[in-house]
Image (tube, rainbow, N blue to C red; front, side):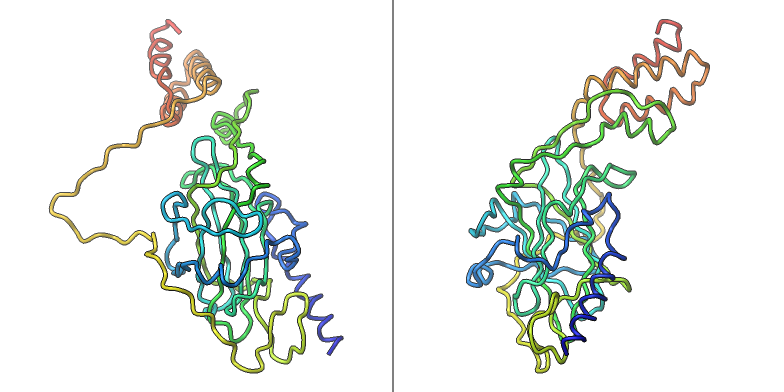
Length: 324
């Protein structure tokens, strides 16, 4: 039995490093099964939470300022989010994103519980790394958690929170002008990157899908006589499923019934672009027009105005007229 446990631990450790996200997504030195740094939360406090059921066909979005819950335990501060994830659909790949809002971002920590509300894995805030904005994504902190529910598990529970220690830290982002220049093969401007401070509130999204390469075993195994590195409880007999309080209404978007005359919402007001970014695009527009590359100048104009520039169009027009 001891040899089997050692072999199991070795296989799971190998699987963990083989499927761990890249350096841009997670710190490879983090071992989620190590719960020594996780906050101790009384079971009575967990039972007071409303666990939101997550549908794998939708992205679950939560605004902590409006739907976050209160939890007083250890170093946890501010509102928390509590999710219930089906564990009988196979191996799980769970992507958690925390969106940067202006100059503030929520630094998430995730504590995973099995169906008996026993802690099974801990992903601290260092696991969720900064990701640059893309075509369909914003500045964000993001991490991909790979979990394998043990046989007999019906649900897993994810508690998302931040700590007082996290609030003392910041996240360095990438200036949009730098990202644009790098993406188009241009010289990257020497301008400072914006800093996002960590706050107690923010918007997080959770996406669950099945996977064939999950690595962290959550819950117990048949034949287990004691706790192993990643084994919790004993499933020789059916486990007792934790019954969570009635869940609050989810924030997943449901398509409304067709309306006779759809109402178009006004465009969101853009934040003013940083002065260094404005200067970069204006100079790039002037250089493109001077070189006779009007198409490039127009692309720069579009990107600058998308970021909130108020002078790029004037610069383009004056450059074309020979007054730039």
